[in-house]
Image 1 (cartoon, each protein chain N blue to C red):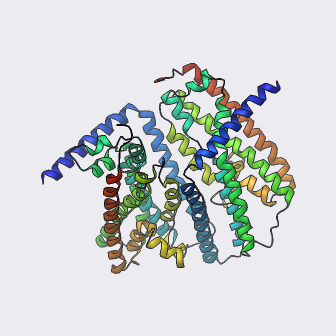
Image 2 (cartoon, each protein chain N blue to C red):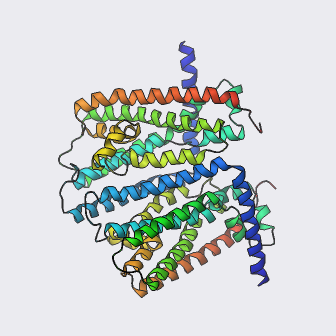
Length: 265
Length: 275
C-alpha cells in the first residue's frame, strides 16, 4: 500500500513539474496543439477521400471507419500525453549515462523513466478525440448499450498497454546497441498499420499484424467489439497479448539494466 | 566569383560524405530500418487500394488501374522520402540552444552545411525506388498502360532535385521563426505531416475533390511528390510539364528568398544563449 502511495505521490509531483514547464513555453503549447489538430484532420481526410470513391471499405461503412479512427486518435492522444516523450528520451538517458540519476531514486526506475514528462498540450487533443468519438457514435443508427461502450473503452485501454510495450521494444535495444534512436523509424512506419482498419489486411499480413506485431489488436479490436463482430475468444486473446507483451517488456528492461554501465559518471 | 561558389559547394560535399558515414554507422540497423519501413509503407498502400478497388467494383479510379495506382504510389512514396531528407528540425534547435553560433564565427554557410546533411537520405531513397520498380517489373505487376522512357525519368530526377531544395528551404523558412519563438519543432512537424497528405504521397491528387485540387494548385505541395512522380513516370502531358517546371522553380526561389529574409532579420535578435 505504501509502495502504491509513494508512486502516486511521485506521479502527482511529476505532473505538477510538467505543468510548470508547460506554462513557461506557452507558444510551444499552442504549436503542439495545432500540430495534433493537423494530424487529426488529415487522418480523417484520408478516409473521407477514399469514401468519395467507394461506399464501404471491406464492409465497414463511413461511420464505422470514423469510430475506428477516433479510437486510434484517442489512444494516440493519451499515449502522447503520458508516455511518448519519456520513451523518446530513453536512448539519450542510456547513451549519456543520465539513467544513473533515475535508477538511484527510491521508486521503480521503469515507472520513473516512463512517467517523468506529462504533456499538457497533448491532453487538449484527448478531449478533441473524445469529441470526434462522440460524433461518430452519434452516427450509429442503433441505440448504444452499456456493454458495447464498456468493452470498447476497456479494449482501448488494453491497446494502450500493448502500444506502450511495443513502443518500448523499439528503444530497449539501446542498452546493447547504443544507437541514437533505437528502432524508432521502423516503429513509425509500422504504426501506420494501426491507423488502417483490420479488414484491409489479408492472409500473412493479417496473421503478422495480429500476432508478432499486433497493431491490429490495438485499434481494430476495440472498434470491432463496438460493431458486435469481435468474439469473446478474440477479446480474451487481446487481453492475454497485452499482459504477455507488458511482462516481456519489463523482463527486457531488467536485462537492460543489468548490462547498463553508465557513460560519463 | 568562381571561388565564392566553389567553397560552399565543397563544404556541402564534405558534409554530405560525413553525413552518409554517420547514417550508415550502425549499418545493419540502418538497412534493416530503411528497407523494412519502405516495404511496410508499400504493403499498407497495396492493402488499402486493393480493398477500395474491390469494394467499389471499379477497374479504374481517377484514371488509375490498381497496378497503375501502385506504380504511382511506389514512386510518390520514395520521392516523398527523398524530398524529406535528413536533419530536418535541427536548425530550430540550434537557434534555441545557441549552437547556431558555429556558422556565424566560422567561414561556413548554414545553407551549405544543412544541405549537405539533408541530401544523403534523398540519394538512398532514389536508389531504393529504382530497386522497387525493378521488383514490380520482375514480378509482372507492371501496368501495361505505362512505359518508362529515359528522357522522362531523367526529367523526373531533375525535378526531384528541385523538390528536395523546395522542401529544404520551406523547412528552413519555417524553422527560422525559432528566432522569435522558443520552441517551434511542433510547427515544423505539422508542416511535415501536411506535406505527406497534400503532396499526393498518400493519395493521387486526381482523387481529391475538385475544390481541394484548385486550392492545392496554387500551393507548393504538389511539387513535393505528385509533380516529380508524374514527370518520372511520363504520365504528365507535355503542356502541363512545361507549365509546371517554372512554377516549381519559382516556388524554390521564393522559399529560398523567404528563408534568407527571415533568417537575416532573425539573426539581429540572436543572442547565442549558452554558447
